[in-house]
Image: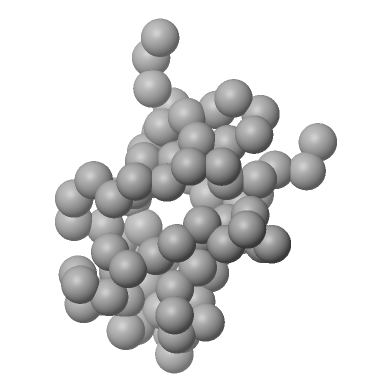
Length: 82
């Protein structure tokens, strides 16, 4: 199955709640992933919060061109207990 982010909601700090097309749902904390030319600007909380779920890429994207692969996000997911 090709993973897609189907829902995303900003929680706090650098934490985003995600839902995937395989039913997995949980939180991902991206604080330790914001380094390098593309991701450094996202250390500004207002810029970080401005993500969208791209309808073509099926993942989180920012207006500066930053994005994370859905597989990467899925691998970092802290799964919610049922």
